[in-house]
Image 1 (cartoon, protein in one colour):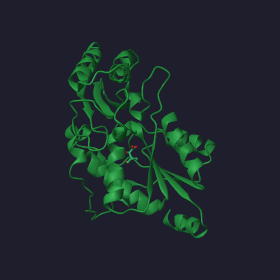
Image 2 (cartoon, rainbow, N blue to C red):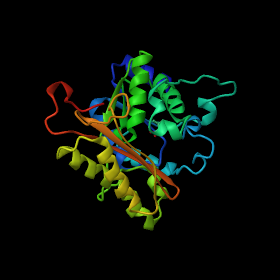
Image 3 (spheres, rainbow, N blue to C red):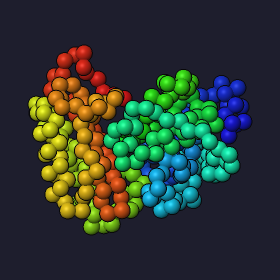
Length: 284
Ligand code: PAF
């Protein structure tokens, strides 16, 4: 992979990387298409990264279908599918880990304490291996996108991080490989995430400024489905992820909800009507 990337760079080609854990869906393919628009060569990595799973999480059960993934990527004209093994990524004696001080202290980092260190570590490795000019990440994993952006800035990595909008099913469910764990009857519970976010967006657009009020409405919408068990419902600063109590500028609402075996996450920007000019703008 490194030799290929060096040859492309010598020939003046612009390289885009789309890191994935496979079991691809339309959300991943939208990242690949964006990468294709922005670069000459597109590398997709598939690696179910063990260091971002904590004890008791779904590393073994994580859905895999490499043959289907290969077919999907071939139809997208991907130049290289990079498929490292765990032994190649973390050989005997491996002992280095990238950690961030503050961003992982929020949202998913609280119930998944090793997760973002594992993500940051594998992403910096993939960047050094595929040597991309840009790397594309979905906004569905909003905290991950912030962590990667922060790490790239902090470590002076010479790569542009591009965030791509969340792709949803027709009924609003954010696309995720983990949706494969949902049983048919669990769909109404899974849909409470996007419904709660849409309701919150409407409340804030209509002038509600109290985060506690918006959160309470979201909680009651989610709890209306017995199978939906809330991990967190937060309204936070879109860059630091600190809690926000008064919505007087664009903020981010983020949710994690367990439905059966799946832990689903979703997020959305909440934009108050006519925020002061200095506070406008979507992040990240
Ligand atoms: O979002 C994912 O699929 C993973 O967290 C990533 C970025 C490929 C790192 O393993």
